[in-house]
Image 1 (cartoon, rainbow, N blue to C red):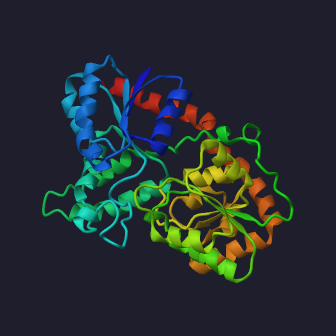
Image 2 (tube, one colour; image 1 turned 120 degrees about the vertical axis):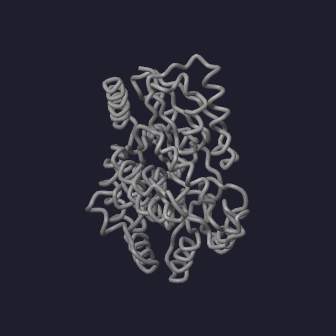
Image 3 (tube, rainbow, N blue to C red; image 1 turned 30 degrees about the vertical axis):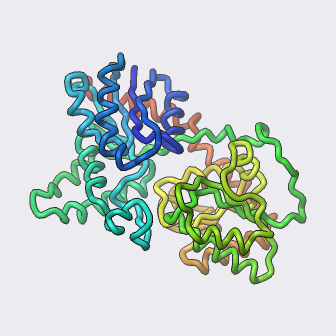
Length: 384
């Protein structure tokens, strides 16, 4: 079978996901993509450009699999002569309805709207979901949080707000986790630069974006508290940075300068070595629909300390919840203090939980994707 994957904002995790499907699927996968920049314009105009490219190409797929950054309604309208009998699935990496906005309205993605959410982008997601034959979410948390927020969003409109569509959307929505190429991180492929010594201070890792929604203020506040208590630890800060970074990073880099062994972009080789050298990985984020970077760190036998919310509880086994998940800033500090002070015990837990992350590897999820995609192709053919 032939499948066209459409990704208007094809960078980072979106690009890795699309290429992962192409690599691990038994079907013929064609990619129809655009570079990952100008995300608002991609949601407005990407469908027009990609529709033109689709019509100009020789792609005649059995199925279309599009990401949430595509205005699927516009794409299908412009290609209707060729796509009217082709099932279309929409994969929700994120959505523009529940994505958190910064407290400072003069910063972030809605600064031109003075911090008020631009509902048009959320409506593009909503209309695209209506147009799709199936909607795939990357976690149960993402699915549930979106549908919890959707009624309030639709009630904002004065009339004909289509609240009855919610049940229909839920009925055709399901969860399909993101596949990750975890084996690219295997220790055998990335020798350690320095073999850790038993007396080395524990290495605490931040491996998320340097942006407001990841709540770096709470992370650095916890580290400063540990430093004030006289505890020994080292810090590695890696992750992508877009535009101006939060001021908390500048303050943290200054105050913890003697403890920081890495700060900024990490090449794939350096990133893998940091994962294997790290003892503890911390998230303080306000936003996480899935959690690729945390899964990568746990796979590399790093002890996770994570908020007891968002997607994290479903990513970990029940045994890990009491040890790793915290409710408050005090809870974060308590778990950090324990992990830093009990390095060997934390390492034993991390080694035990690492194997559980293999269920997110493409080797495991590739066949699952093929089953889901083949099912919808078969259903459509049966209906027609």
